[in-house]
Structures are given as C-alpha cells and as structure tokens.
Amino acid sequence: MESPRQLGFRHGAGIAVLLLSLASAPVFAQDTQDNGSAASVAPQVSAPGKLATRTQIVANNDELAMLTGGSEQALADAIVLYKQIVKNGGWPQITSKKLSKGAKGEQVLLLRQRLIFENYLPFDTLGGPNGSLFDAAMVDAVKAFQVNHGVAPTGTVGDRTLTELNIPAEIRLATLLENQPRVSAYAQDLGRRSILVNIPSLQLETVEDGRVFSRHNIVAGKLDRPSPTLVSTVSDVTFNPYWKIPASIVERDIVPHYLKDRSYLAKMQIRVFDGVDGPEIDPSTIDWANTPPERYFFRQDPGENNALATVKINFPNKFMVYMHDTPHRELFGSNARFESSGCIRVDQVQTVVDWVLRDQADYSPDQYGQIIGTRQPYELKVQTPPSVRFMYLTAWATPEGAINFRPDIYNLDGKGFVLGQPEPRGAPSTN
Image (cartoon, rainbow, N blue to C red; front, side):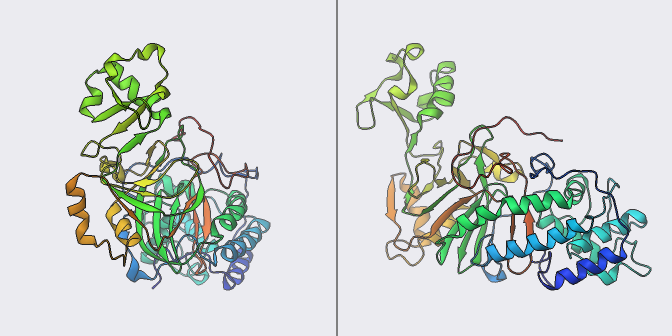
C-alpha cells in the first residue's frame, strides 16, 4: 500500500487511465477562465482546526524530498498530463458541503470521478454498486488528496478540501507552469545533503540523497515582512546566540514597545550600544522622538527571553536571514504560521542541528543540553555543510508520482518570481 504522499497522478500509465475516464464520464462545463495564475482562486491561508502537517523523523519511510534530481522531469510530465485534462474539458465540480464515509448518492459519484482524474482512485471503481458509496477506499483517496494539498488528512470532505477539489484544471495547470523555472533554479547544485524550506507549505525537510530524514513545521515571514527565497550553504551553528536586532525591527517593534513601557528593554534583556562595537548606552538618555532608531545598535542577550531561543543555523545570504529556535513554540500548533519577520523558525530544531553536525568530532547530540545550559554563545563551524534552499513552490511533483499544490500566500504566481525578496502585501483573505 502506497503512503498518502506517494499517491497522485502516476506518470506514463496515468495518461491511459485519464483518456479512458474522459471518454466514459459525463462532461462538466467550466465557468472559470484561465488567467495564468492561481492566486485569485486558490485559498490564501490554511484553515484553523486539525493540524495539517507534523514534525517527525521519517528516515525509515524512504520518502522522496520536495526537490530532487528528478523533480524537473516529474514536473514536466505532470504538465503534459494536466494539459490533456484541460484539453478534454477538465474535471467535475462538487457542490455538497460535506461528504464522509458511508455517504451515498450523486455527489459521492462525482467525487469518485474527480479523484479518478488525478489517479487517487482506479478507474474500475467507478462502475458497479459501490460507485456512489463513500467507502474505505475513498477515505484513503481523500486523505492522499489532502496530504498533497496541505490539508489535514481527515478523510472527510469539508470546506477546505472542497475548495481544493473545485479549483479548475486550468488553474492547476497554470500553477504547475509557474513553478517550472523555480524548480529548475532551486535544483541546481543541490548536492547530496540539503535543507529544503518551502515557504507556501510551511515545512522544512532535511534531505540526503533525495530521501527525507526529517520533516519540520516552520514559522515563515508575515505577509508584510515576507521571507526571501535563496540558494546557499550552511556555514555554522550558533548556540545561545545574541539576537542582533535589525534596524527595521527596532523601528517597528522594539522602540514603540519601549516608549509604552520604559522597563521593556530591561525585562527582555535588550541592550543598546553606540554602534556594533561601541559602548553601551542608557536608553533613557536618548531623545527617541528626534533620533532615528538605526542610530544605535540593539542586542538581546542569550536566555529564556531571547527571540532566537537556544540556537540558530547560519548561511551566507544578502537578506540577513537564518533558521532558528523560538521561545514561542505554541505557534507550531497553528496551520497559518506566517508570523516571523523573515527568518525561519524551526520546530524541534535540535533534530536539524544534530543532523547538520552529524559525525563531527567536536559535537554529539548529548552535548546539546549541556551547551544550552551554559547560556554562553558558542559557535561551531560545519565541516560537511549541507546546501540550503528557501523556496517558493506552490506546486511540485516527485518522481514516484505525487503532485502537490499549496496556497500562493505571498501572491507571487503569475509574476515570474523565482529568487529574491518578495514585496510586502496586506492581510490575506480568509474566504
């Protein structure tokens, strides 16, 4: 039995199933015009409720990563197949607000047809007495669809799953095409070991030889402070880091907090210096109304209040971003985790650190707690550094046939965006 992540459109053999189903199934009109972008149709945020993704070590599952040496060809194959779906009229629209195991009737039959189009169910299940029954096989198929669309795998069709099912094939094709140059750019010089961060899916993968070792929920940049996309290589890991606060955050967050509460900086163990290497300054002596925040350097000491918490993973980049722990681990329990100022916060970050520093003579996992306990900054250079990719993939395909779609949260599809700093945008629609 294939895992939900492996189910999807099976390349090659899938085309025969597609054409057969199109020849036998009724034709359904599509009212939505192709505008070249899924941004106006796809859901913009993950819905509240059951957590859609989990942080876990999956090394024994032999799961392919989001991005591998075969990703470009897999995406090209998917595009060929979706072009054929569009050419033949697309797929049926489901109108029932909720469908679950045991349901019967026309809407279940339409759901079965819809799942057959992307090979979540075999064509031969369409006929016979169970064609209009929501049976156990359909539960598994719906779960597989949900996993590949970033929805909590409940096996029940609710509002979010219904929205994903009813996005027209033309829009899905446009999204696949939009991600071709992204996949090509991100896949270059990937190397044997890599850390893959996909912003739209809010997940990080540690990868070796194309297989996932661990998968982590992340917190990414807010809509008005979006995370950049980039290509780099890990350089070092810093335990108990100082937080050298960017001037933009000082201006937007730190100084306003201080002006409301003059004890704020002391409580948060934030110090103010006259330049990076300058002497410490008493903030109460500064005329903040007439002094630009960037005039001074702000630094938060290691400790329980530190915004980076226990550790950060560094890599050269012009955006001054990194991956790090967080004292606000409750955020990982939400589906809409766009809450940072651009850096990536990582759930269960020690697993990533241990993987990055694996086999180094100057580190072992049982040292992690001891190092953190010192509350002193400690930097380790990475001797066998993995590559790093911050990606913006709203669609991707894997060689075993899984085709994934995610919301265009930063509204970048249709704009040719591949690498760089996205423009800030306003609050997302929840409709």
